[in-house]
Image 1: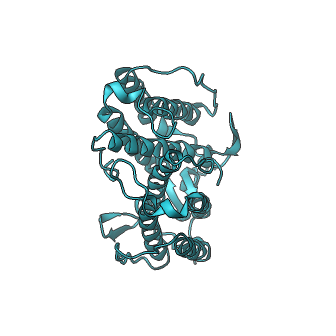
Image 2 (image 1 turned 120 degrees about the vertical axis):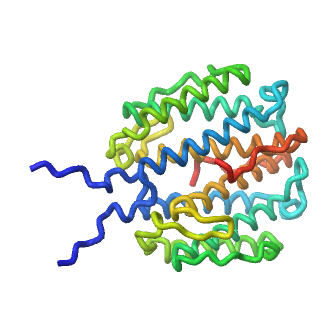
Image 3 (image 1 turned 90 degrees about the horizontal axis):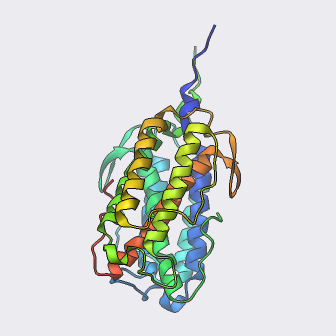
Length: 161
Length: 161
């Protein structure tokens, strides 16, 4: 008797893979925040863009909201005007979300990724919403890389997680 | 009788999801290349970094290699010094890889993502290698966003795919 390939074999990433993947990116973003000169984090800018500290705060709020959603299925919109105003506070808030993700992420309901969620910016499947948080983090962090280079500071290696 | 949740339910992304996800990013990167002023694409730089045309060529070569691997399981290292030298040639090469991905991506062997592959930069599971291509694309494209802003050009919206 031939058993057809299980659908699981067609998966690109399992939930544990996704958590490892995201935590690797979170660790890298943390190093970028840490590397940033304190006196430039919330002030230095290129091309009229937001300072990296403001972009990193947005990453933090999106990530925190997404970790909450993995646990609860709810996407409570944060107050985008709030957030840590110093490097130390940003790193402490960062570590709290990483700990939450480590604790709750692996227990995410397996239906989370296929069902449709209502986010502040629209309805989408869970996998799109979850991977968007990572993509948004990579995107804004990379802008921090350019700021660091322009400030004469070597950023952490992109391929190290 | 209770049937345990199939492992497939623990998948974050299926192969078709991944292809949609990556093609969405490829379409966005194409718009960034298209938006870039022709006379700045291979010359404008910030912080001593490579011009965006050179970074986009690297994205192209990594993506092309990864699409080849999805089809064949082989990772032939490209000659990193080669590549299209004009915007038109870069866009044509881009479209050829997108067409390849559309044709062959959905037929990727389901074992590809879990087995270990030998890449020019080391051994890793297929899912890590595949998602790295997308992450590398987001990372370098975001640096192009800063260049565009510094040139006074509005980049395409990040959230549109």
